[in-house]
Image 1 (tube, rainbow, N blue to C red):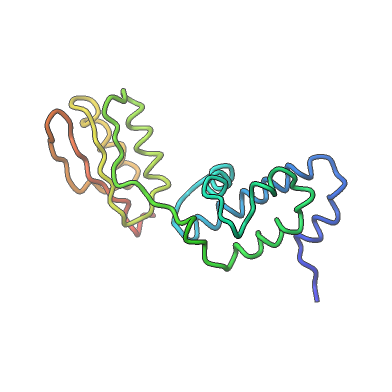
Image 2 (tube, helix red, strand yellow):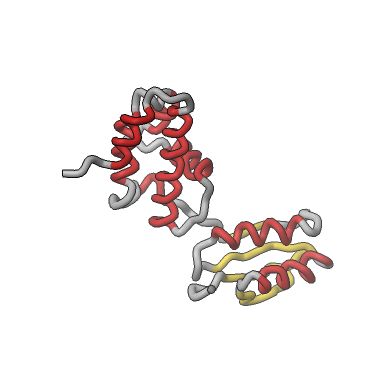
Length: 172
């Protein structure tokens, strides 16, 4: 039977400089990939690892692993393998916001933020974006539409606007 490629990598690199840092990066990528598959979120390796660390699931002592990755190399490899097929623990399921409040954010920051949020937002879910009167409500919808985001509605609410958007499921 063939040996697990990650275990072979551990055996070949255990004594090399930067091995611990590489293990932590590997762990971050596994966390991020698991979140991406299970929750449709788009995160960096650091963000995925942060999410796991913040939630501290008891079945995965990731905090201990990060503190001394060399000692936990085999556990990290096992985690990476399990994360490919196992369902994500309930404690780690991500909740996506229903509202992005960009009131008070100056242009072009509100446009940049809304585009970044929608880039990682799950397809098919609606998001309400609160925008100030003037340039924000004039510019943000166009920027999102240029990215393939569908604007469902614009509604004036008091002294701000609510823009309801959705990332199409079949976005190419």
